[in-house]
Image (cartoon, rainbow, N blue to C red; front, side):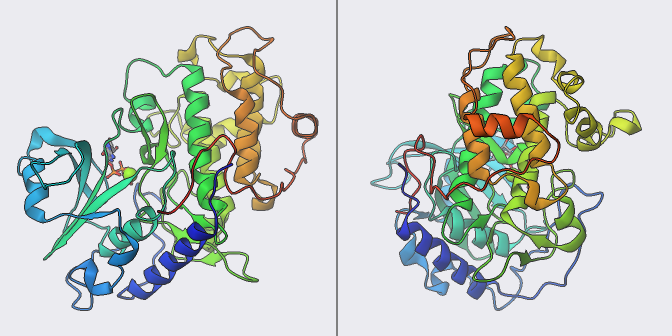
Length: 409
Ligand SMILES: Nc1ncnc2c1ncn2[C@@H]1O[C@H](COP(=O)(O)OP(=O)(O)OP(=O)(O)O)[C@@H](O)[C@H]1O
Ligand SMILES: [Mg+2]
């Protein structure tokens, strides 16, 4: 049994308190989600109230294992941020490959890393940088990207992560010519769900808020890990049922109630998970302007089919060439359908998602009889029949038994 236990819960709460304390400037509310890939707040590095170094905020002590790098060290390992070291670019800035070892600093373990450099002209600012350190610096889980360190020197803000050998799921699904096999897709879905479960099952849940294929990174063995905690939020406390926030996230993935009202719950992440699951099942992007207008929004195109047993399999990625278990595909489609429920309360909790995906592992056969084991009886009956099924709220498991650790160091 994993142990997302008291230490982590306290740490997450502590992190939240610090994020609150350290959220430095008031940003005007803005709802800029529609029609944009990223929604961002502007950088506040120039704000004089911004701590110039993380030590200023007196929170360094809780990040014992997170290394404070100097800018010179990170400049050295990326060969002065050379163009051929670029791994990718996002809303935060450019990501470079690097390698740390004893030559960089005595005592450092040899390790390939990814160095994310805050773009000073970019939309995401110090606030996201700090949120990322606060959450990711304390969480350790096999399905969360490990934060190795950071740099906060003058106006430089950088983050150093474990290097994820195969890059993003987005690249593998939409840019690589070799299609991901069915079994790999199901194991990625499960890994990503376990990463979310670790966050949601903390005593004070952490809402990821930007769950999408580009934020799911893949290790050499295709283990899925969540990255980018810049928009993460500590969940509701006490009698609250949601957190009201400025709408941030990515168009095509954000839950409808969040886009419309700014009300954020862990079920908003479950909706985004449903979108990613649909992308895995169909090989289509959540928003694809190159398709005919009826098909541009993946959810709008797929939902009517997901609700019709006879048409359900029409959505499965043709690139799989039938190499999947029909039965497992049915179950995964129905899971996506419930995750995408308009009513957040009709969506499963993430532990339910994990439990549903676990038996679908190893279901790569094209034989309709499927090698995968069934869903637990009560689930199979309730999920595969009827239109108004609600997922049972199962007792909170801090982490799935199959997940070895979920803890704060
Ligand atoms: N730890 C890592 N290991 C390997 N590659 C990485 C790592 N982190 C990021 N990358 C690469 O850098 C790219 C950009 O990542 P980044 O998170 O900055 O942007 P994004 O996810 O595409 O967009 P957004 O800013 O909306 O999150 C990723 O798609 C991935 O290819
Ligand atoms: Mg990202």
